Length: 97
Image (cartoon, rainbow, N blue to C red; front, side, top):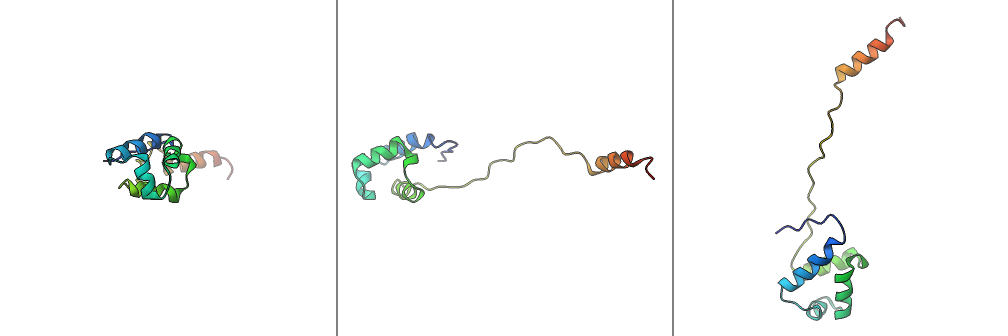
């Protein structure tokens, strides 16, 4: 299942939910990572407090991975056609030759 994250705060609930879904306590997850229960609690409360390498180790211990997926391109208004730009240039040059 995909869990799209748009904000760092969203990671809090996902980390806790994933740990519980795996049937792990904070202490058990900490042992897998070589951390104490208090540190796991801190990470779940504030995932921004860890580095990327530690985050990847944590996600690996929870049997999940990071996937980078391109979002759909935003819909922008169409650009003026090249012919229109040329017409505008030629109009502004009239009378100069």
